[in-house]
Image 1: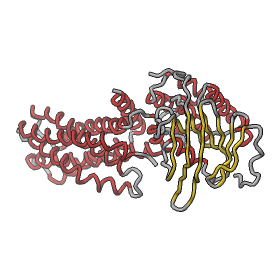
Image 2: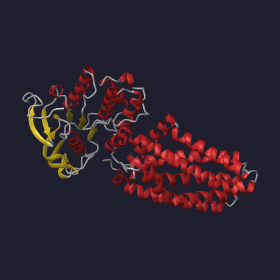
Image 3: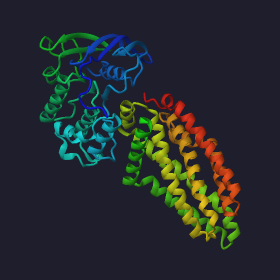
Image 4: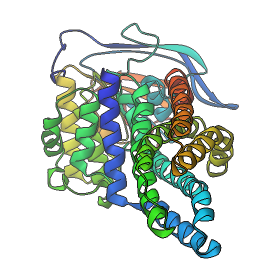
Amino acid sequence: MRAVSLNRGSTVSILARSVTKLFGETVAIWEMDLDARSGELISVLGGNGSGKSTLLKILAGTLAPTRGTVRTSGNPQPDRTIVGLVGHATHLFEDLTARENVELAAGLAHRRRDGALEQLEMLGVATHADRRVGDLSAGTRRRVGLARLLATDPDVILVDEPFAGLDNAAADRVAQALAVARDLGRLVVIATHDDQRSRSIATRSLILDRGRIHRTSPVGRLAPIGEGLAAG
Amino acid sequence: MSLLVDAVVLARKDIRVELRAGQAFGSAAALAGIALILIGLAVGPQPERLRSLAPAVVWIALLYAALAVAERLEQIDRSDEAFTGLWLVLTDRRSLFVGRVISLSVALFLLQLAIWVAATILLDLPVRPEYAGLVLVATFTSLAAASVIALVSAVVADADRRSLLVPVALLPLLVPTFIAGVQASTALLDGRSSDGLLWTGAAAVEAGLFIGVGLLAYESAARPD
């Protein structure tokens, strides 16, 4: 059983080189390079179809690039024990309760199972801990999905649209949880449309346009999204 | 060791979900009951004929049950990409295969015993000491059928016409288990214990073969995309 904050002295890095992903003749990602390491929170911005979700799946290793390489701490295959992803799906079992889902994932990751309630509390969904996930609203499910991911305590946290479908209070909770993960030395990459909220927690932002990095900037020096881009 | 521990956790999840919903197990048990009642009505009070038909009836009902339970578990896994979530978190992904083999085996074993009890009552089969051997038959045939179904379900998981492909792909692979199960139980009903053991051994060999193939091939076959 690994303790939650074990081995945080070491640095985890992701190095993507010349990554291209084609779906038929459609370009999802084109010749992309990315360097990222522990303690960073990178916000990937861009319009619909700009390649944000595809990029996260490639970094997670659930989608193979057509060309190029992604190395996680030097390994050609993303290490399954250190990379966690919440995509558009929440990866939850509808017939299990929120708590059971979080405990199941934590147990399989060989992390503390008794921390499930803490994670649900941090994201403001502890009151739903013993409810069947299939009976929860979409926003609550997203937060339970994120609690599930955080309970597995990966070194690299990839989250697609973490604030989608959430009210302001819930979105702030999620932002806070991601910031805590960043401060604990995890590498966090989020794909989002919520430029303003992501600015408050990100250390760096990338703007994608048609599968290419259109702009990259430390937070605070980024022009509002939409300039020269189809935001959406 | 981690593989087995994780597999047991996953099997418990499968069983818990099925117990909570009860869909596949319930419909399979109902179908088996209906099949037994209909065969009893069709054949009438002919004990010898009923005894000779019982193993085939039990096994046809059981194969339907196996498909229903496997399909239901796959649906649960694929809903909301829950399977991808498991895939990402596991250290050894073969535990997904072993876990599914365990949960399916438990379900099929219990169903098989329940169907035999129902068959004994509904078809008025004589109770003999050799019937205890049916527990062994149920153990190995359940393991054989579960390993085949778990592997094939993973291979065709993302196919377009999955519900059609699964039974078509399974049919040839399950024939040996079906024959071994029918022959072993027929032998036990006839009081030929040694023949029953021989056919049970055949099912055990098939189980070993498919568990071996599954351990080697599962990760590349089941990778979500």
